[in-house]
Length: 167
Image (cartoon, one colour):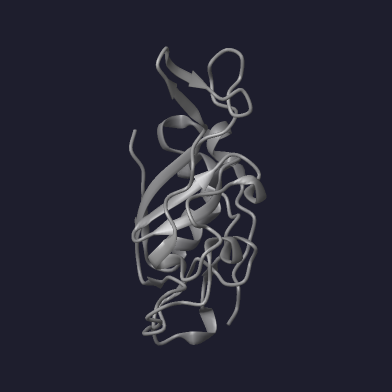
């Protein structure tokens, strides 16, 4: 398997960024996949977590990534200072994007895969690889945790897929 990794240039980042949000999306990294949705975090990948991310099989246990914490109290919602700036903006965020294409997730051909999200995000296996049913095995594309949105879009499109964003 040949892992295709080239750093995208600034023009590629701009095309991948929905609604002109280049700066924000350039620092968002793949942290979770669920069906045809990819989740990106703007905080350090090692700090990102979600429900049961340490349990295998991930496909039967894990939930979507946690966003910045808000405490709901009798007096009303209160932002957790570790996740929010003093001006009320989040220090980091989760971005969800739809995609489709001829790719297989790590759980493909497993009734219970041996991986947790934590293991996948540590690089044990790619979140997506070119479908095993395609003929050209020499050009397998592997998309690992930690790729930014522009690189994710480039690799999905290189493999014959598409990435969708909402403005």
